[in-house]
Image 1 (cartoon, rainbow, N blue to C red):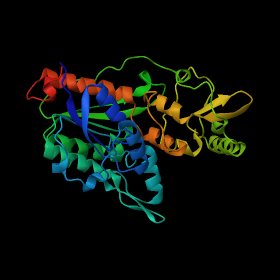
Image 2 (image 1 turned 90 degrees about the horizontal axis):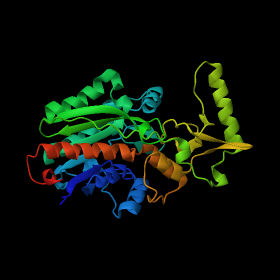
Image 3 (image 1 turned 180 degrees about the horizontal axis):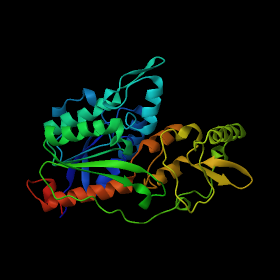
Image 4 (image 1 turned 30 degrees about the vertical axis):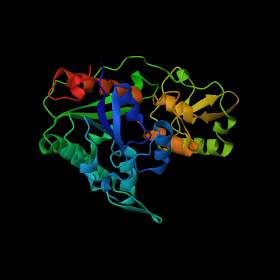
Length: 336
């Protein structure tokens, strides 16, 4: 008989990691997410509100668990994030500082990785899975990633493996993310091969779409002028218009709520349209039963920041399988 393994869901967002690990046979015993809108979506789907600011939660108060799961904030390490910070004259990554936005202060998110470190140090889970943007590995000429690996390997003594995975084999989207897997003891671990389904956009598009998702003339004209301007300068910035839905989309980002420029669907005799929030959910591999009870703008942000569920599910299964082969203590290691 199967026994549940216990996991915690840090920087939980809307619960993509949780869905994946529950499908792999786990039980979530603690979650943390500081964004109120994401908390609403999380509660709607899991019946609980995640704990808030992880920096204010003592590691000793986090429940014991077998696997720690965390997609720590990626903005300080993303290409877009670095560019915007550089243009404003602010630091980025682990050097990220507070940026004034009117009366609102943006948190120095780059250092939140070390909240993961302190919890691992205190609770010593059998394994962990961390996720971030591809650019994490090359950020600051590789110095940031070197600090992360040194913290996990030398600081905590974990056996650490990583790989950049493109989700396009399981969802119709080119989306590369880095996954870092660690084990408390040396393990012969290999990242799983993703099922080569190669879905296309047509597989997730809804047949009937509200007219509100069709771009207004002003927005569409502005996007075309913007693209023409950059084309004249010899670069490829601008909107991406999908005319063949038998192809895959570019990466969905949290800025999609602004104008949908990165993925626009061509329509006959009318302006192109944005994806609907439900289509974005499907693009990220979320189940059809997943509840979307926030505004469209918030939903776009949330799915743009989410993980691709089928990818995480396969990695979760591989972690469990690896530990099972090397049983060293009771709990998850009795999982069959």
